[in-house]
Image (cartoon, chains in turn cyan, yellow):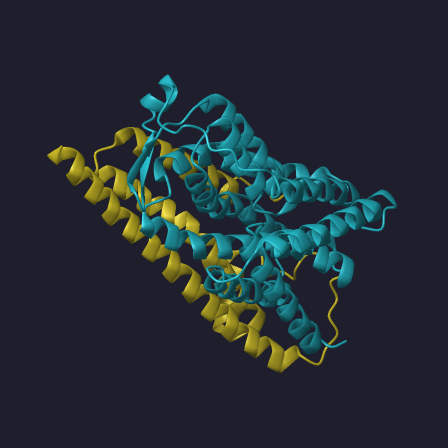
Amino acid sequence: MTILSFTLILLGGAFLAGLLGSLTGLGGGVVIIPLLTLVFHVDIRYAIGAALVASIATSSGSASAYVKEGITNIRLGMFLEIATTTGAVVGALIAVYMPTNVVAIIFGLVLIFSSVMSFRKKMEFPADQGDSKAAEQLRLNGSYPSAGGVVNYKVHHVPGGYFMMTFAGVMSGLLGIGSGALKVMAMDNIMRIPFKVSTTTSNFMIGVTAAASAVVYLQRGYISPGLCMPVVLGVLAGAFAGSRLLTRANVKWLRIVFSVVIGFLALQMIYNGITGKL
Amino acid sequence: MKQALSKYFRDKDIQQLIGKQLRIGVIVSSIIVFVGGVIYLVRHGHEQPSYGDFTGVREGLTNLPGIWQGVMENKGMNIIQLGIVLLIATPIIRIAFSVIAFLIEKDYLYVGITLLVLGIILFSMLGGLAG
């Protein structure tokens, strides 16, 4: 296989990953790493570099739309970015010392977790109740526009959320993914933020979190231009197409299929990690 | 009430600005990646890819002066890498924007928080963590 055909096939694969990732809300990065390592036999370190860059691209691209709509809680995002960036730097540091097959196994586990999470029933908590002193002091409580007027909400359990975000950051730095599922979990379940706000704010943070570890990976030679080019362009185009389709498509069955595929890929990653093939 | 309203609008302006900056960053960097990609494929498209063994990318692609030098020599790989560096810089520039935005709002707590995030990233960049 020549570089030309390799690039074109990868471009197509990345497009599909971006499309499915955006339609199902799981993000494109989660399939990029298994695609590169299992199908194209790329070393996992190069795969992590490429996936990290792709997650910055999709996060920034879609964040631009959400931020304009005023749903994203920028103060909350900014505050939690202290946690995620610290975690990401730590994750990128751990990655040097961690054998690649262990990275593959952890990746598989996070992948299974993300795909299970996407099936979880979304619980909405009464938004305007309760009081958190820290949230008050940090001015984290916010509001967002909706069809029925401006909705006010309060943020709960700030320290717990902060801790969970640090963990999400470590995973992001170690595995090269946005770890959106972990971030959304921290904000939904712990901080009890409306779902709409938590997804967009998580997305807003992914770019900065990924950038914090990407600068380390760049200097370490993980970020290979020949690989990043088709991955970034493909995932971006796919995510863009997905956002156009999203209003029309019935994503329920798609999410099921995609989650099954992800689960299968995750097991494959874990298997290959255990047998030391990755 | 009036104060709250004006605060809401100022917040909105800043959000518009941040949204625009993110979008421009992504578009410009993808164009650069695409241009570099075409040059790279024309010159090296017929060669064999080798990503199976990790050796790290070649020298000159891991730091800004090296990347820039290759861009001046019209090397496709370096042009792609320039686009990627710009992409990585996009959310970082967004943070710098936020510092200014919070300064205008006189929200000094968040000026501090934002500077802290910027500091962590700068440390990651310049702290010699690459090992």
